[in-house]
Length: 236
Image (cartoon, rainbow, N blue to C red; front, side, top):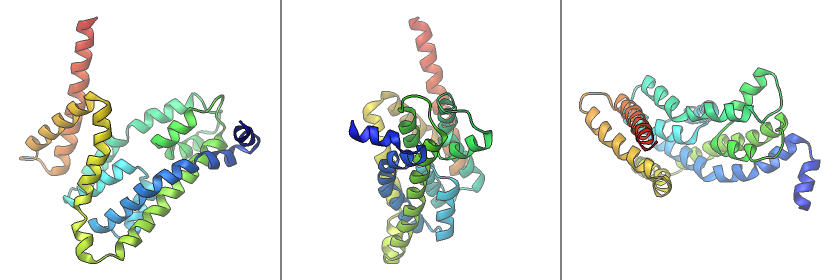
């Protein structure tokens, strides 16, 4: 109680920094791993930092590395990243209902930093959200991701080249690690993963790898939602 009261007395931006410190700490291992894998994939330091600075989306950045390793074109990578990150549009719209009125440009700036973790922390706050609070949470989380991406790259550069090249397999291990917890909690994720994998295997025979992934993802998601909706209508 005393800690909560002390936080309430601080300025919104300072409270945001303190509240977002846990997010920054949680980003540390993921960002270090991204930087390390970016080096092993063949990205330069500038390219790695630019991706973390301008894309700033963990899962999408890992997927982009996989597509780059497969030799996928830029258009396919951009489109796939858009699909993976489209949920952020909904999160930003949800936060809009809870935050104080502000200039649209200011809203656009803090919407850029609206990751899953920032969304979870900000929307669980009571009352109207202050713009400064959102910026505080976003800034410390963003700084952690960008800085630690660079550190991970530099650490990877110190390793022997043979080890760097062999670490490409870690990309697939990372995706499995991200997928398994969701598989355990939600049955629909299993259906989506299996159907997308089967469709991708089929499309890969006559489509470039990037477009086969995009098409498989769209069809699997759309197909599951259509079947689920029809099932609910029949039950009603």
